[in-house]
Image (cartoon, rainbow, N blue to C red; front, side, top):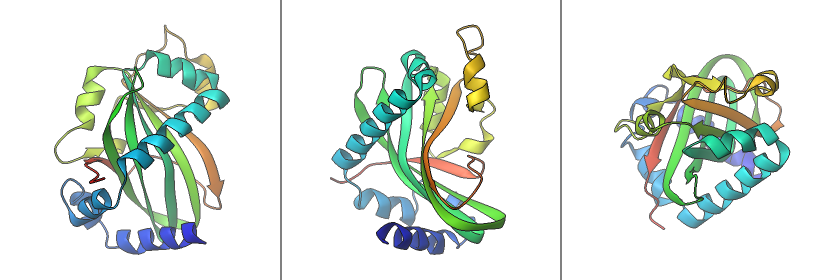
Length: 196
């Protein structure tokens, strides 16, 4: 019930339209999120989600061993009726396991849709350009990244050292709920600085 209420609150907040995405870098939504977030909790859930992903998906573990860092969003809530919204917090896990940076992802979608779901995703950042684009001052519009590849099972099977050519690979995991269509189009990632 608590998750459903959170999802509905997220939808109401996001239904204010494109204002949410344009003000992500320093807007009130980002500041409120940072003030109410816990560094320890975000880091702990991000590490646990990445460990679970690696245990369930050997190709993700292989990709992680080659990435400079992995941005993990362990629990994204997505919901909507005609207008959809999604959001959640995550952290950047460096190759050595260190976590120093925290992020939020928010997004809007329009069209025929109804339902609520939760899921997680990990972005495998393969080079320095991917990491620097993540920390742009106004936030990073994920759907506009030309070097981003969403890794599905078919593509994962053919992924090898010879075919590893993109800067960012996205892997979805732990999908639950009644809403179809996972994607990163229309989402924005912004760095947050949790107060506690």
